[in-house]
Each structure stands twice: as C-alpha cells, then as structure tokens.
Length: 285
Image 1 (tube, helix red, strand yellow):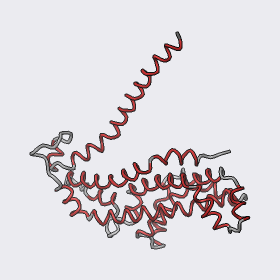
Image 2 (cartoon, one colour):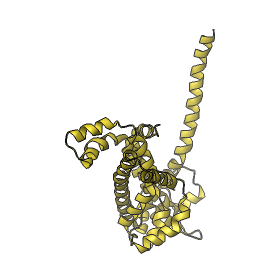
Image 3 (cartoon, rainbow, N blue to C red):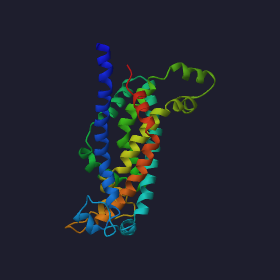
Image 4 (tube, rainbow, N blue to C red):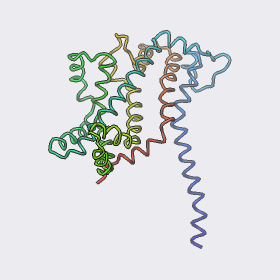
C-alpha cells in the first residue's frame, strides 16, 4: 500500500517541479523577449506601450539597428570586445593554469601564501581597488585593448587559480613521473600531459570569464572611457541612454540584442562543460 502511494506521488511531484522550473524559465527569458520585441518598434511607441506586440503602425523594421550602429560605431565596438574577450580569456587560461600547477606541485610557504592570496582576491570588491587600479593603468599606459587584457588577467586570476588548483590535485603524480622518465622536461610534461587533462576545467574557466569580460561595463568605462576609439559594447550601449529624456529607446534595444546574441551562442555551445568542469575543479581533500 505504501509503495503504491509513493509511486502515485512521484508523478505529481515531478509535475510540480516541472511547473516551478517552467515559471522560472519564463521569468528569466521574458526580459530577453521584451528587448527583442521592442527592437523592432519605433522609439515613440516603445515608451507609449512597451509590452505590446509590433503592429503595422509601430513596426520599424531594421531601422533601429541601422540607427544604433550609425550613432555609436557599434561594429568597431564589437571588434574591440571580441579582441579583448578572446585575448583575455586566453591569457587567463594559460597563466593561471600554469600558476595553479606550480602552486599545487611545489609545497612551500611561498606557494601556500600565493594560493591564499589568490583565494583572498576573490572576495575583495572591485570598488575597493578601482581608483588605485585606474591610476596604475594610467602610469603603465594600459588604456588600450592590450592593457585591458592585462587588467582582466589580474582580476580573473583568483577564481581561475582556485578552480585549476582543485583539479590539479586529482591528477596522479605517476603520470608526470612516467613522462619525465621518457625524457620530457617540465614544460613538455605540462603542455603535453597535464594541460590536456585540464581541458574540462579550462573550458569552464573560459566560459565564466568570457561571459564576465564580454558584459563588463565598469572597468572599460573607467580605464578606456568614452573619449577614445577603443570603446567596448557595454560602453557604447550606455552612450545611447542619454540624459534629460533625450534617448533613443529603439536603437538602445537593438544594440542590446546585438550585444546579447554572441554570448548566448557561446554559452549554448559550451554549457555542457560547465557542470563537468565545476565538479572536476572542486577542492579535493
């Protein structure tokens, strides 16, 4: 009797969970649908009735996209955002994985201190260091795309080293010893043996950092600003907000769609690696 009752309750529980997750999905997806919807409406009609579907009267075609690209130089911003994101993620993966490997394999007070410094950097708010960071960026001439990559390497190092260190601890030393017996030097051992094993965590680190760097507004705004040609997508989008009610909502919505599409495609292509990499990179005792 009890078994039959449990079997009968399970479909109801699954249905409740499915309904709850469906509501959450709608809540998260509706803002994206709202932006896409209004990107095809005239700017005056967006303010008047933002939740209405486009009609023959309110539909503006691709004019919002053309106006947004023309006003802001969105195409160059997309190029700079791609460059900064790709180079920054590449630097983060390369240097933090090597750092984590050294910290994990070389046991000393220095490496232990370094590890805890990286962990501590994860909890330090950006607002605490942003003014000194801007001053350093000005002193070392980092107010350019390559300089931004160096800054992102510093800000992304904490979490990345933490994740890589947890995974490296799970790699048996015998694998590296076998490679050294075969004549491989430390660099060959790392790049030919260890780094391929780090692939799940490396992909996860790449996804997390790419999403953050692509969408980041404050760091490019403080370092590069709006007066240079190196503006990234978030800075360009902010320029459309305007002041005193003088803003083109149609162009703003269109540029938001352009900003969102690449990172959504990247996330959908790599999402299966996130859980695998997070679990693999968990700290092991």
